[in-house]
Length: 430
RNA sequence: GUGGGCGUAGCUCAAUUGGUAGAGCCCCGGAUUGUGGAUCCGGUUGUUGUGGGUUCAAGUCCCAUCGCUCACCCCA
Image (cartoon, rainbow, N blue to C red; front, side, top):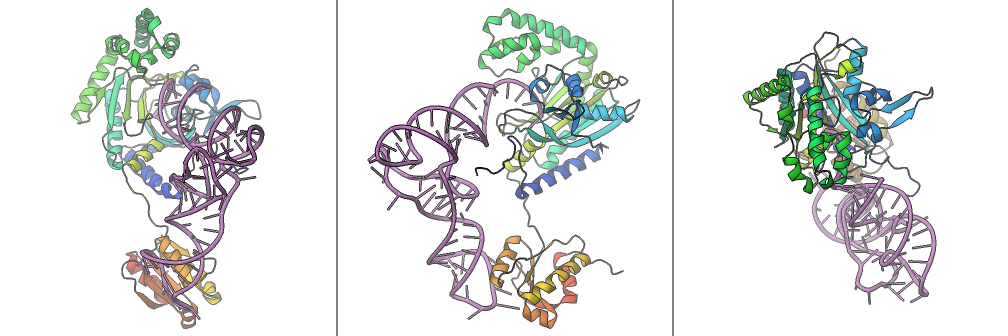
């Protein structure tokens, strides 16, 4: 291995044995999104660094130490996107999509964070996200949660836990932050190192500390719900009613605090306990202040993003297969004459049968070796060309799995026979 | 950034108190000179992650380093 290039740490290849499962998963997600009226928006992977500093909070971990940031040749500071919402809002604003309008948008693609890799956490990872703009009420929050619930059903993922919470509006959160600072400040000596550090910067984060010694203290801490402004409390109450009405089970997690600064009111996460420490498959919430923060008119917004590596890992854990053979028809050609005939025959079959997956054996070898390849290809049909067939203008056609029987077919009739076996229409002759 | 575990063939893994680096899978060929899957026979595959040290002798012990992995942190 010495001297060979290797993939960059934390960046994974998705190999053919997995790409089918990825594609199926992505298509399933797309179809559910369009069932709710979401339209795709394609966004750049690189944005100005300031965009993330402004939206995520300049002292958030992501901005502070996890971004792939570099100077463009003209001296601008650019960053590989660490998440999708900021870019989506920027694009919506820049292209006039958000002004006094309702928009339901989705995007997909790679995100980059320079973290230490572990199970379910990579430096290049993939997300599909959706954002709904211009709707202030809890009904869209409930709809978007219902959408994600449908997603898990469509993907066949079992038992996920939905956690919800309300962060209130910004002034209420500021009051609450002070209350927490007071409370934990009284016990400063018994705080662990991390929590002491957060006390000053972001006391809300102390709440989701996993430190065992901290749990009793956290349990007795002031609750965010008690500090919610009346508007947010009502929003949250109606959201819970709507979820109950829709039959969507959830648990209220008062310590659920999204990591990014721009969230307010509703936050939610879908969690599994089958993926180790990184069990959040999907997370989202409301961010009513972000559009304004980027210079737009005040625009309510709610959205979510899901981690595709984690979804795929869960599909694999469920033993959900995704593998299928590479082709339907495998052409065997032995001898110089047969090799010469194989290419045009393959081309004419592809012309006659749109969508046909056909591989031709290349590289020589006897019948035995080529049949072995045909078997491994997973093709249902082998087409055999040897010296005899070429001389007679026919081809052998063998059903590899159904009957193992081989028959001789005129080359002009081959497409019709294949169409019948595969249950596919022949292309109309012009 | 911090800590634990692990690095032997393409893959999964053996190798006794330090004593000639092995097996299965995969791949290739043959048994069957024009026919796959099952069986049998044969064959290819290594700087034991890298660099140093101890020793008559190191995959094995020591040091360093790189990589992978899991967890903390953080988050999708």
